Image (cartoon, rainbow, N blue to C red; front, side, top):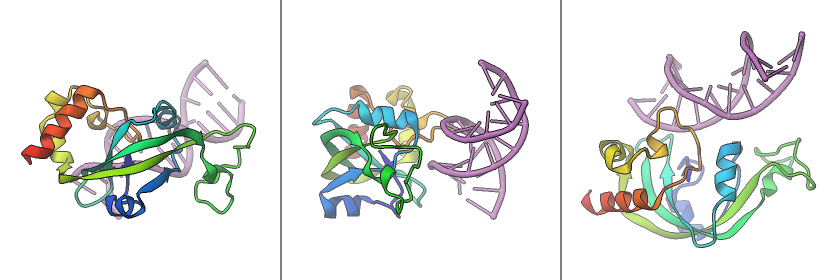
Amino acid sequence: MKSEPDEFSIDDFERRELEEWTGVRNYQARNFLRAMQLGDQFFLYHSSCDEPGIVGIGEIVRLAVPDPTQFDSASDYFDERSSAANPRWSSVLCKFVRRLHSNIKLDTLRANAEKLDNFTLLAKGTRLSVIPVHPKQWQQILKLESQS
DNA sequence: GCCAACGTTGGC
DNA sequence: GCCAACGTTGGC
């Protein structure tokens, strides 16, 4: 899961403990949100910042429901084409699990691209804010945490 | 601020 | 269904 630390950082996540993951407005990313299961863990990735990279871990504690911000005309994420009967967008509830001991920079991920075997994050031009991580990739990424 | 690489929109 | 125009993302 990507977020811009100016908007929502690992500090914010740790402080709040629980966060409704709203504002995803891309169909492919939304479908990945909907596929998430209770207890699934995810990496939090800081994007559009000085040091892009993975900074922490969270966990899904409630399955996808209609994202409330799509109905809120005061929200930046309001979508007038959505209705209660026909919602377009979904959100999940996330729990803070932990910070990484040290951040895994995008550079480091790239340097290990081969081990990560086609990790979607590293694919050219990927802009998805929600990206699947396969179990093997997860293990490989965690190894990078202890070696950096 | 630049710009490549998308995704989305809407006219036809 | 095509595709040009436009908007967005995100690293640099």
